[in-house]
Image (cartoon, rainbow, N blue to C red):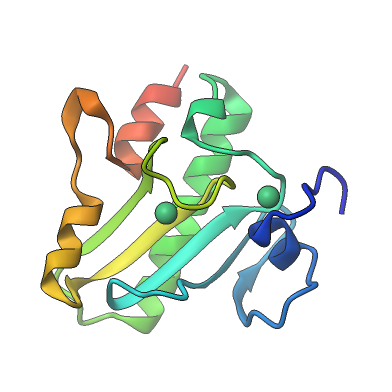
Length: 142
Ligand SMILES: [Zn+2]
Ligand SMILES: [Zn+2]
């Protein structure tokens, strides 16, 4: 796969060199379950292209369209698989609090399991932490 970074687990998934079951795959993105789920449903949506973190996204049409597509995919998967959830959460960890350096959208259908996991998905305001997808989209919008 063009642009794949060796040693990047998500590039390996995108290159189909793992046995990860895909929930969704198209030209630009793919989705799979988080291996260490924090909620009743917890999916990740990643771009096929290796983009390290939200800091590598810029205010431009392409990046806006990509994130907005990732969010659409996440919403439709959770709408399909967790239709009775009362609350959903979609967002990204900002460095240095991100775990894998390949952009990934966390898609959660709450409640959190166990409950303290909510701390991982809390915005720390100016200090970073978790950024909701909608907020990132506002930042990328031209
Ligand atoms: Zn990668
Ligand atoms: Zn993460």
